[in-house]
Each structure stands twice: as structure tokens, then as C-alpha cells.
Length: 345
Image (tube, rainbow, N blue to C red; front, side, top):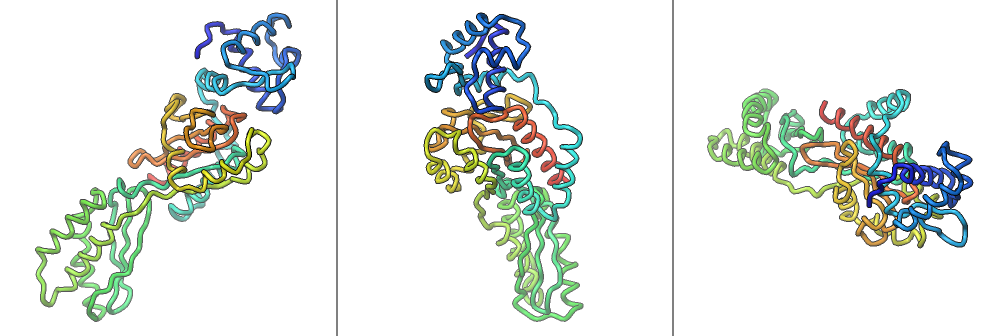
């Protein structure tokens, strides 16, 4: 829904800002006291009446005040000219908190905590999809006389380790020779490929290797192929649900259906898919109220963005529709950029 009158849009912005800040219905008198609208009280009341007729604000009860509707929030978000960047201090705090991460698991665990803390909402972070990840490097490390440690580094930054049983006992010299013999070929046949094609390439190579005394070579290559062929479901981290409980008064119904929905793995994945209002503001998507078709989430807003272009993995926050959208969108965008930089490096 569009508004042609810039003044009415200014009144709507003021109502959204005041209601988000106070959680109280906003009246014309309060608007005139808090904002420099440059018009009379009668004009503000007329503009509020027009906004109500257009379904952008509503009276929650007999109070003279008004609150934004889902459509009002949507117009407010759509008319944001740009997302205000975070302050230098805020950016430094994000960077310092995330840069201490030791691996991908730690990065995403810290990201959930950081997002929920910055926004006061529940935070959701999706792991980069392993099905779309490519192999960055394969390494073999001596372990014992009959075992090696396999290390696979993926393009997402994920590091996987497995123990490979050689099926025979070798001395230290033989183990070193085996590793040196296979290291180049393993990387030649896998680097730059997704997991499944890389696995297939290794099996083809294994069939060409000589057996007999070098049977350990085929065994190692086939073991690496098996690791790459493993199917993994997408993982999602959720944090800050206590923030929803603290905001319980903003939800018209019980929090039970909302919390139940958030326990479902597939629901969390769907939350991170961009369906409505897609990436209209610097790559950040916002879904408001009834735009969320998942049962139990009709009174919530979800702000998401992608942080990994290869797998389209996303992160975001969820909270009541009475949300500070500009600040939340800025935080989500900033954190996503830092996470992307960490994973790429």
C-alpha cells in the first residue's frame, strides 16, 4: 500500500517510532510534543484518520491512541531510504568478539549470541550448506602405525577430521611415503569440486591404482571418498529465546505456539528463506506479521540476510512486530558482513 502524501508518511514514521519506544498507543497530542511536524493538531488528527482508513494504523481498544498495523510497519520498512550504519564503536565490538573464534562452529555460536545481544531478539544462524561446499584442501596426518588422520577443509571454512584405518601395519618411513604419495593426487582430484563429484573422482582414481603391496593406497583413497560422500542435513543454531519471553506482552496470544514452532528444525530453515520483501534494503529481507505463513509466527517479524554467497546460508533475528527495524536491520547486515569475511579468510 502506498501513500502519496509525504506528510502522512511522516506521521506514520512518528507513530512507529513512538510505539516501538514506549509500547503505548500514540495520540495526536504526543506526536506534536515529541516531533517537529510543523502542522496543527487538527491536521495531525486528520492525517491519522486517513492512515487508519488505509489500514496502516489501528486503535487497539477504546484509547484515543493508535498503533501501527502490519501494513503500516511494512510501508515504514519499505520507505527506509537506506540502512543507517552502526557506529564505529559498535563495529569494533562486533569485530573483536567474532575475531576470537577458533573455527566455524565457534564463529556461528558467537554470531547467535552476538545477534541476540545486539538486537534484544531471538537469533537464528544457518550453517553453510555442505551440499554446495567445495573442497579447499585435503591433508593426511600420521597417527599410529595402522591409522592416519584425514583433514578436509571446505570452502565454507568447515574443517572435518576422520580417522582412517590402513588395514595393515606400517613403519614410520612407510607411513610418510604413503602420505607423500597420496597427498598431491587427493588434492588434484578434489579441490574445487563439491563433495559428491569429488568423491566420484576419487573412486575413479582408486580403481586405477595398483593393488598388491600398495593396497593401503586404495584403502585410503576410498576412505576419503566415503567421507566426502556422507550426506549431512543443514544445521541451524537458535539463541536468545529468553528475549521473546521478556517481550511476551507484545504477543496477542500465548508464547507457547511460537516457542513450539522454533523447536522444529525445518521451521528454522524456512525462517531464513527470503520470501517476502526480499532483500529490498541492502540485501536485508524483512517479513512482518501475517507475511509469516508458519503457524505460531503471525505476530512476529523476521529480519534476515545471506552471509555466504556460495551456499546462500543466512542469519537473522525474530521478535515481535513492535521492533526497532532500522537498528535491527543494521545489526543483521553488519554481523553478516563480518561473518562472511571470517569464513572467506
